[in-house]
Image (cartoon, rainbow, N blue to C red; front, side, top):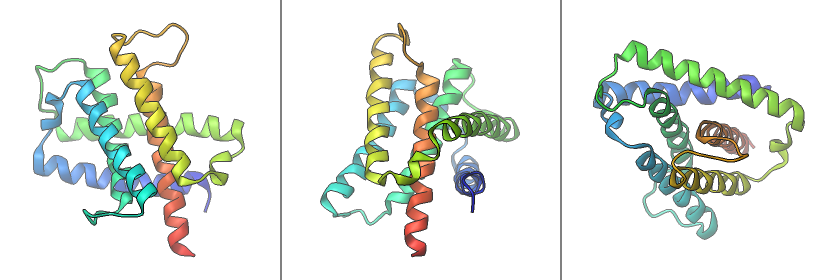
Length: 181
């Protein structure tokens, strides 16, 4: 399989879960400030790293699910960045899923451009390195949030969330390939 197909397969699984949770919960997450979504992402990434370092998983929920959560929460953050209006908490499911799909297309396009330039270097990386890069991106996001969204020469919040999505997709691809062995 090629990267584009593998990417689409991962996103299809994430999207399906996102849509089902929207049916169950609506868009209650719209009440969250961006910093709260960032903290939720941080918690998920820290759990992955803890399991990677200790080899112990007491909750018995696979880290695959945490990477899916990183993708979906990052998409929520991108939506919050765009909407920037917390008065309208409920979103029409059709509009929400169209927005999800558009943000995924934009993020995948970024991945394809970077993947071309870097020659699929991610395939030679360890999943644990991807976890560390996600954590670094989250620390950057926290700093940008502390700076009221302002950067002098660096990428903004949206680019960091997109990178988190792409690293999480790569991690899920690598984890699925390891299961096939």
